[in-house]
Length: 338
Ligand SMILES: Nc1ncnc2c1ncn2[C@@H]1O[C@H](COP(=O)(O)OP(=O)(O)OP(=O)(O)O)[C@@H](O)[C@H]1O
Ligand SMILES: [Mg+2]
Image (cartoon, rainbow, N blue to C red):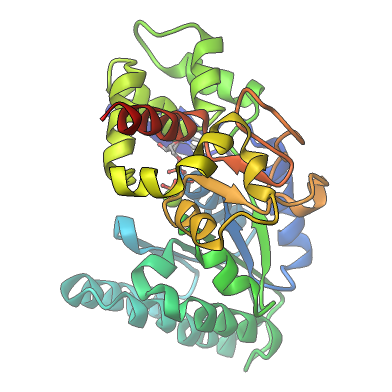
């Protein structure tokens, strides 16, 4: 499978690095089809979008007609052989860009898939990145059900089908999970080897690799944030405290729990942890709660280690990255002083 090129920084292109197992998983799906829509979740910035783009390209290479939707970035593509379907899709994209009714476009993919299959049995892939944020979390489950129907009850039969969805919305996992209409698979930050390659691709003065690793835990987006800030952990942490709204009332309300969690995230697994706190930490994309068994079968690419106290990974609960943990730690300190 050819590796795609990604724009790491303005003017700096890199090849999609590492994630060898994930690439093998694409090939396997292409051979067998996905029996359920695969819904991928994981820490913000861990590389879900990059992976879906790589999957779209790889599946096209393997003879698939590919629909790719990424409403948040306003990127839509129909890499299909049928020119009529392609122009129908492009017309819809144009209209949607005018009135921002993303739901309509997301739904149109069902009709377009049918249109393609009406003429000939084919291999079809639907790849939807962060659609739930665009169509609304309340419609996420219904959309996944629609995707499942396309797999289970196609009006015209297909040769193979691959349906991949990614979400960076912490809450969508439970929203979709309770229906059991999808194969929900986590993806973690990059493993050390792969992350080394990204680190090396970044030009200029930079901290020692071990330091970059300790702060980012292999999260490519955090690496880029650090780079952007001139490697100021302090600036990145301050921005997180602001954006995640780690306000004095939030911190004061949950102080006891948060103090324990920055020491060991697994503290939040204790049965008396308030559900409201878990919900808020999940919504804020600070932690991943109820981590999957580390059997690679359940994961996209390689699973994280069972525990890594330095990176803030516990068996059942993990900080998304060490910087997320640091933001909470710093907020606790500041509110304490205030
Ligand atoms: N395997 C990879 N090779 C090269 N660059 C990568 C790889 N994975 C991620 N990146 C780069 O790291 C950055 C963050 O990745 P990406 O946007 O895919 O994360 P994400 O999980 O989709 O984030 P979000 O949760 O915000 O949607 C991007 O600039 C992306 O191009
Ligand atoms: Mg993304």
